[in-house]
Image 1 (cartoon, rainbow, N blue to C red):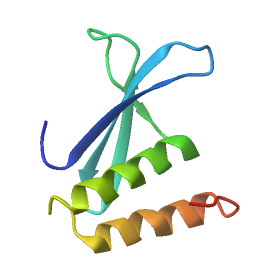
Image 2 (image 1 turned 120 degrees about the horizontal axis):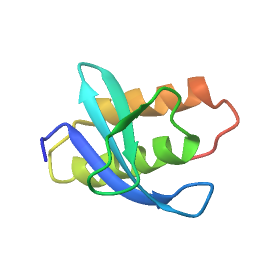
Image 3 (image 1 turned 90 degrees about the vertical axis):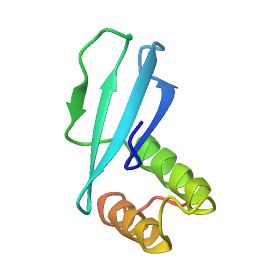
Length: 89
C-alpha cells in the first residue's frame, strides 16, 4: 500500500461488505470502493460523511507514526466542514 493510500472496510446500505480506499493526489483525496476482491474499483464522486470521518480518524492515527503531517488533518477537517456543515467530529 502506498504511503498516500488509506483503506478500510464498512457495510453499504444493503448490508454488504464494502472495501474503501482514499488516495492522496496532490492536496486532493480520491475515494474508491469495491465489493469483492476481484471487482473493479469504482471512484466515488461524492464520498459519504462516514468515509470522510474514517479517513480523518486514520490520518490522526498515522500522524503519530509520522506518515502524515498535522496540516493534512486540518485540510481534511476543512473539507468536511465545507461539505457537511452540520457534522460534528
